[in-house]
Image 1 (cartoon, rainbow, N blue to C red):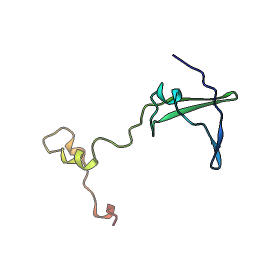
Image 2 (cartoon, helix red, strand yellow; image 1 turned 135 degrees about the vertical axis):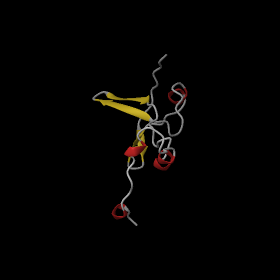
Image 3 (cartoon, one colour; image 1 turned 180 degrees about the vertical axis):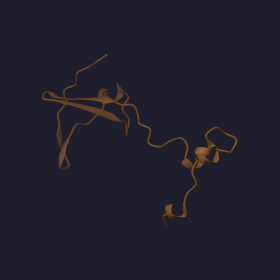
Image 4 (cartoon, helix red, strand yellow; image 1 turned 45 degrees about the vertical axis):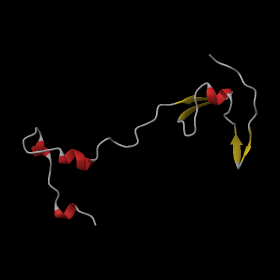
Length: 88
């Protein structure tokens, strides 16, 4: 399903803006803070939703190290921190 909408680019602060409202907002289900990719060409641009990127890992380094114990595989590869490596 696709539609064409006639609108205009307007001055917005020091730049230009295009208001995303009505069908331009509702059909692709755009909401505030929706991540998008803008593809630019000589004729104009296309705006498409993107998948959110992972901004943080599900486990901290502390959680991962706490789960290690001497009886698990590769626990011998965990190094100890030297006093000279600590920064305060």
